[in-house]
Length: 122
Image 1: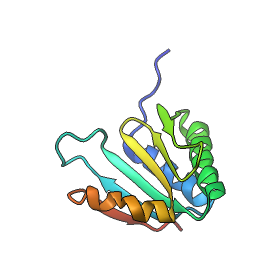
Image 2: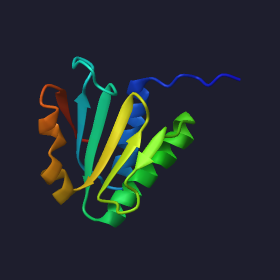
Image 3: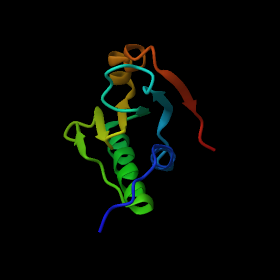
Image 4: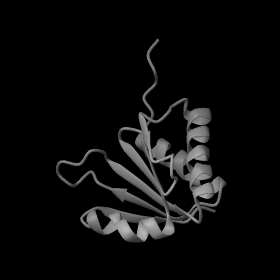
């Protein structure tokens, strides 16, 4: 049985729902499709206030995506210390940061050529 391909737009909207469900903050979508040699099409970046909240955000995203789209991340990094959790859904990579770590790495500036969209969930 072949798995139905999930569109990037559907995946992004469900990821954002998962982030919003546990009050993730400062959500940004970076569109990397116009940049050469990128590893994916989109980054979804958000912040949590503690390692507990970062864990809750990553768990919520995994749960909501699994439930609604029957999909799971190809790979997850950073759950041990929960300062920066990266969830790789192949075409969409989710970065969940603690605020101080996000400020330090400032990946939005590293990908300055990307189209950045501020997400304000309702």
